[in-house]
Length: 199
Image (cartoon, rainbow, N blue to C red; front, side, top):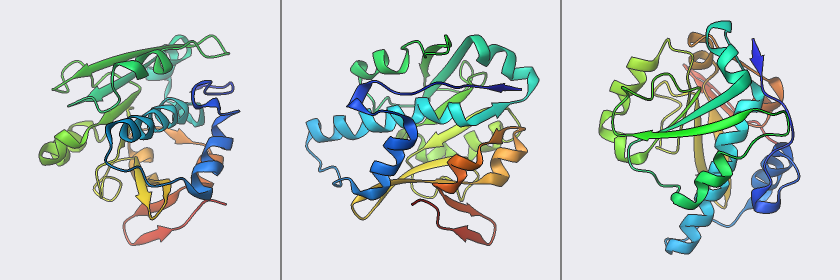
């Protein structure tokens, strides 16, 4: 199995991903609607998106490729903006390259290791999740209710904090394994279970 490692990310001046998560859980201002503030919100979300992969193991069928190049897909409208591509595609300290792909359909994205499903796909969300249910793809979105509907990681705003929810059953169905460190910082959802995580 492939497990990505190394400290991430340089942008946003974060010493490491866990430090970023603790800072986010401790309380970030809720981003207002201003375009500049929205851009900052999505720069942080992009940093999370890229770094989630460090805490995930892919099955051997997909993991061999992840050791050399991590493919991050964005399905639907790209909320991150062109400036975030440099952050996403920077080489990790462990030598793993990151490539981003974007598209309006799953055709060229279903082989990505990590897939962000944009809010523009809300009406087709269940269709996408059903198509990906047993594929080794880490699905991430900030669509409300994403994790409860079968997505793996949901980025959410909780009052004045940016947090994330994880559906472990969805992760397991796809043949992925997730670090307990990441799970301990998340709101765990799935079935009748809901458990608050984080510091």
